[in-house]
Structures are given as structure tokens and as C-alpha cells.
Image 1: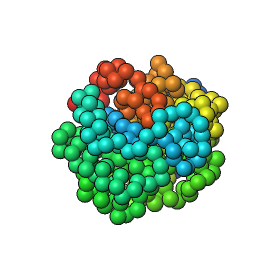
Image 2: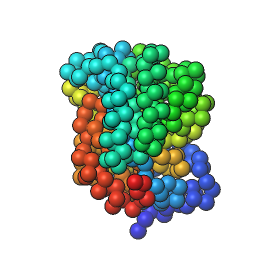
Image 3: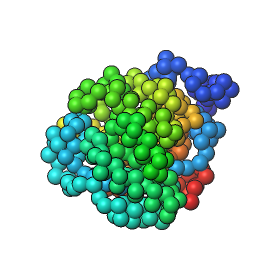
Image 4: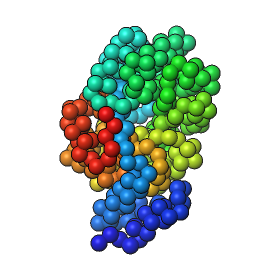
Length: 327
């Protein structure tokens, strides 16, 4: 039987609407005994079914790789680390567009251009805008970008150029951020999220779980994203990469990762929650449980510098998820 306390939380959200839970409410849920995990997932499942019963299927291209001046402790592309990744400048428009066509055929509903570095140059921005316009016209997928810091003029150019969604992760809670990155401030990331949203673009912002943060800090991030009113929340799980400062960080357990997803859903009932990097190594045989835990989106294909799962396996999993598969 479902715990009456947890069932009451779901009823409260369904009855009173979004943003009804306080930080203390969610912190109490985070610290419930492990035997309550399935009840918690079921609660999140009910909320997801009510607010978000349609799937988002994301894909990316690592459009510019390596030599980033930021010192993010988890990142294989940071120039502060030695990880042996491929390093190359911004790909040309034709290669980016070709990859978008491939991912559309594979089943993706969104395609994102992702670049390393703090901010694009003017020339790079022109290339991205031209690629975005062509992709939107030729494939009809939703075109996204994860292109570093933005000012308002850059955001306007991207919006006019055909970008529909801007992605910029906060990575972790403000209170934990200085243990992850010291080369830019948390407020700079917040401002980029706001600049993108001010243009009318939808905004995705989330983070990486398993960076050494505690449960309070995970919930701090969830509530920060609620305050920013972002449209989507991409959740990644740390896949420790040799050569980075976090290479020895242990993986989250599958149940802990699923519990994280559930709590982000309860804090942000109507937002898209998309599971991205690190799910294969963290969730392993529990990957199909992400929808039961409250997610309504998945990234397919390869990531930036790590391999993803076989795409057809993911598509088959999505079709069996009980949500509306958007082909």
C-alpha cells in the first residue's frame, strides 16, 4: 500500500496546483527511508501523467570541441584537464545540417548544436544561425542551442536565426558551485538563462547530479529552476572521466538517481524533465524506470565526448513507456 503521507503530497499538488510544495516539504521527502522510494516514484509518476504525458526526444552534436578556458571539475573539454578528447573548431554548416537530418531519421524531435568555450565569436554565431534556419526549414525538428554565455543581442540574433530552445545548465546548486567551477560566477549563468528567455525562446536549464552535492543542494537547484520558470530541466548523472578533477567520484546508485528525478518532478510539476548524459552507467538496467520516476524526455545518440546507447534500443524503450511517443 502506498504511504499515506506520500500519496497526500501527490493529492496536494493535483488539488492545489503547481509550486505548492515548500522547500521543507521536499527536504522531508528526500530524507525518507529507502523503503519509501517506490512510493515516491509512483507519486512523481502520477504528477507526470497529469501534466506531461508526451515525450521529448533530444539529440545533440558536439559542434565545437575542447580548449574551453572554464575549469568545470567534471568536464573533459576543459583546458584545465588532460583527457585526450578530439579537439576541433566549429564544424561547417553542411556537417551540422547533415547530422540533424540523421537524428531526425533516427526519431529525434529536437536537435541541439553544442559548443565548447565561454561564448561564440561573431563569425561562429553567423554559422550557427545559418545552420539553425536550414535545419528548421528542412527537417521540421525543434532546433536548440547550447552555446555558452549569451548577452541579449546574441540571444535576439539566435531567435531570429531559427533557434527555438536555448540550453544553459546551472550544473549544481549555488551553495555547491564553487566546488565545481571557479572561472565564472553563478550569476553569469543565471543571467544567460534570463537573456535567452527574454527573447521568447524556450529555455532548458538543469544540471549534473552526483558532483558531491547533498540532498539539500539538489533541492536547492530544483527550487532555483522553479524560480527561474524554465521550460525544461535536463538532468545528467556524473560519468566520471579520467583526467578530470572528478575522475574518482563514485556513481550514484540507480535508486538514488531515480529518486532525484522524482523530486525534481514534484518541485516542477509541469516542466519537461529530460534525462541526458550518464544514464547508461548510472541507471544501467533501470533506464526504463525514468518515466515511472517522472521524466518525460530522453536524449538519444552520443553525447559530447562519451558514447550513448544504441538508438534503436532507446526508441523501443520509448515506445513501451506508456507516454505519447512523438514520431
